[in-house]
Length: 79
Image (cartoon, rainbow, N blue to C red; front, side, top):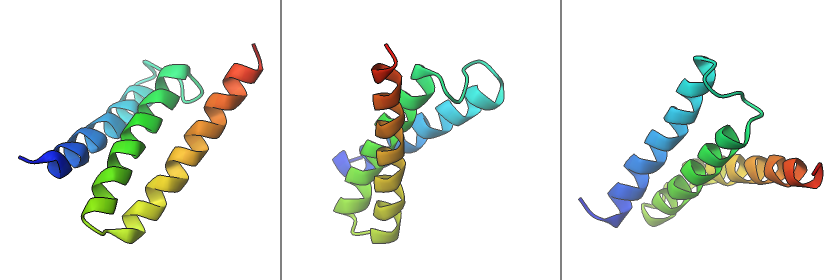
């Protein structure tokens, strides 16, 4: 397994982990943990999509990362 595959598999796992934890109400969809899992997962998937030239997947994950980053900024600006 090479770097590209690792980014793809780990990124997908991290995104699904956040989603699963949220659905089971272990973490909230507005929680810091959820936002970080989404951001980290989407960044890894951005790397994967760019390197395999999967541009639609790349665009989706860029927006996913931007939304997560925006939420993170909002969280820190409240403090």
